[in-house]
Length: 476
Image (tube, rainbow, N blue to C red; front, side, top):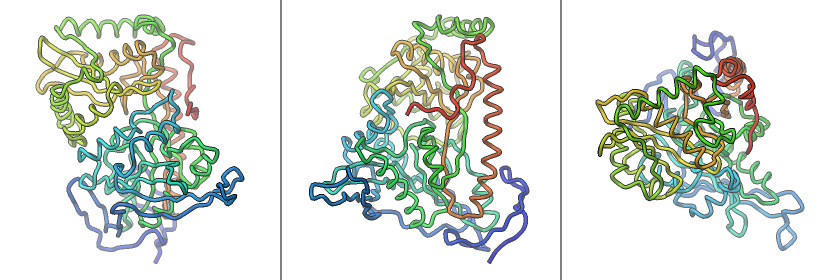
């Protein structure tokens, strides 16, 4: 059965004529319904998927290079499997893969076993919230883990920060199922970093290729619509294009440390009007009898996390509508991540009135969440806690970058400039793949145009901030 004609009007597809046939990876239904389960939304009839209960073998792969020969002189074999929880992998094995993938100088705390296990153990990223862990593990014949991939079977598109709802709408309009899908990412975390985490061995490239092939095989095995790898490095992004993934770009705002000795030195690189505005905003904090503190590791007590959770819920209730993270997550994450956690707190007298959560990486400070006491307002406190205190901390810790999270053009006038982000999308239905690819080409051109315009209108003095320096470049 096939449909020929134009797609219905869509925010991303527009009116595009095409031929859509029933492929082996999708099926047709005339009686599509919406089914709700906990926080999971399914559009159309749900695909039949049986995720791994504990461990699912994806088979063996033989390394082909001469340097992969084992002690017997025969080619070494790699076994690949799916585990239903990160607890099936020891912290040492997982973190060895993560550190080899990033390098110690660019350690990414969100890829650590401590962070990811906190999401699962706290009930934040689990089946009940629409995130079923299906992590992929590659082992050699001696059971040494050579690579891991954080992977989830998802029943919705929440908590990803790369938006594909219009794609799901297009599938639904043609009676096809978009959910569930496979998502390779760090849940609820729009932070760039490697996604295929491979040990630094002589056959590293082969293991990378094997893990990518295993993800694609799993997508077919599970009969899902698609496989998405969000916020990979640009290096991975380019490699995955060669393996049939569609490429997508987005944009965030990051601050770069140009070897500043202090905050005032940073301000001297800015245009006079922007410099004056920032100084005025910072002065208003002390004028409101608010004191800022930066707490790290053991300085953050259980009471801080309980209060911060209230702040977080105040933000989600007023802005997002959904609190992805549980109270238990913050306690577990704080205990496991130690000195990699930086909590900026604002106090009025003895009362905690606001806070911003940051994680410290090898060369980057990652701003993640912010919240304040319900029913209170302090002028410019959000800017101080989230942006200026982060810059102060990055200069103090000699970090090269502050990543202040997703969205927010208001960050530009405060020194955070636009940089590209990346995602890769493996669409199993060939007809939809062609249409989505056409959309992504047009979207990418728009993102590049906007980035150039924003760079040109930045807050820095002429020649103090190189324009368009980030596009397509990665240090990983």
